[in-house]
Length: 548
Length: 91
Ligand code: HEM
Ligand SMILES: [Cu+2]
Image (tube, rainbow over all chains, first blue to last red; front, side, top):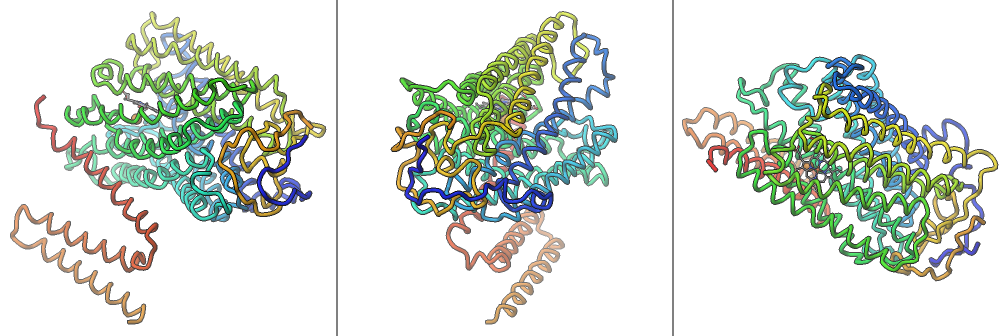
């Protein structure tokens, strides 16, 4: 163990860790410590993940047979609606930013906390409030609009707790906006001396980019959903043609938010993967500025492609052509990142640990999702596969194969820092591989199904599709085991007698590895001063990788 | 000029513009009517941004952030218009 800090500040003295500071409930529920708030988020998004996964299990079980024997038509609609709504707004959007981002943004830039610690706590309470409302929706019979709330279904025809769901998503948006605001101000104002923009870890760049989207896109969703609620309750006629409205206006407004929102779900993952790859390769990132600006480019161009969700909606052909072109353009910065990670790994002496396995899985699945996205952006192909399982497979490759895998990778990578404990590496590797395999068995058949014409959101289907559906459901069972495994060995590591983590178990660069694991309440004993470039491998004082 | 007096003056100006909006709605100007209303609304928004939201005192960065909001709104309106204004084109 020689993990001396490589930044010029006095050696660490022992200070109580942020976990040991106090154990009272009050010290958790009224904390303003970004690290504790990150853990509050971790627990709450895990609960929502379980509910969303329960809905997914119902869907996959129901699809085992062509007649849809398990659920009624209405029940099936409610299952996929609640699945989508919970997974998008209550799990995936907060996952990386609010857990890993909350924990790491201040530490990575060398400061004590976020710029507005109380606002950070408020974000969590707002999230919980909206989450409780969503739980109310679940128990009060659910909602059947899908996560997309298309009008006139949502505004006129749908039964169920549409308004309550809309209000829940509306409220959760404020949590997101506050988090984005907090990150932007923190990154602008609280960087440690010497932490120039060119020295920011790429994790920070991608969180900066995602915060821009949080702040600029989320209000549009809020307004749009309020309009739907108003239309439903008092018929104001924004979307109803009989009253002079236009139903497509809803789709424009919704996707103006929701395409950027899909990048909300993937940009933080890109940041995580940049950290995992460089740490495993022990090399500088290839083309730092390209990777950093690719995040910003994705955030900006991502706002101009939403019409690719409306190719068959009756949108003008000219608009479709414009959106098709812009959608192809947004793939460029995404591809830049993939090439740069690959170049970083080239000829590196990589450490094949669980975080790297997750990162490699991410790259493969993200590429498959991105390339099928390009196919969908082609007008002629999209007319054929729109609203089929091809689309379902596309976005699951990116959001689940990509973002969820990156979240798991990041959780493993920073687990020692967050908890001060080492998890069982062998089990970690097995879980990473199991998730990759299970994921592909679940979702690859869905590309085939969709291409052959299996529509999404139907549970009764022609018998010739059954084989692929059964394979997909079996894969889902395997995937579930893969996701459950980390819950056990990560929690296991917390038991008394679990192995203690040294400050820098991976021999990685970055300020977070210069402070103790877990860090003290204010992250550093003394204000760090940054004198080096990011990813300055080989480390000046190479840290040992053993357990200490 | 004291702060309170300035705010009151701006408020009075906003009220005057409001009266103008209402008045313009009764003018026989046909197609120009909505554009007159938009112009008055823009003037009100600028007054609010500049005085009530204190943009006149802010640094360049904060002004940039405020402008960004409008640029994004322009993206929303422009690309939505690409659909609405070209629906009748036969291709
Ligand atoms: C390489 C860039 C990408 C392109 C060109 C692309 C293209 C497309 C297109 C054209 C569709 C519409 C298909 C249809 O409805 O017929 C689509 C759907 C979708 N994409 Fe992508 N995509 C890309 C990346 C992403 C990313 C990064 C994510 C998420 C993190 C994502 C998530 C989704 C989702 C959620 C849908 C379906 C939404 C729904 O209808 O429920 N895509 N994509
Ligand atoms: Cu999209």
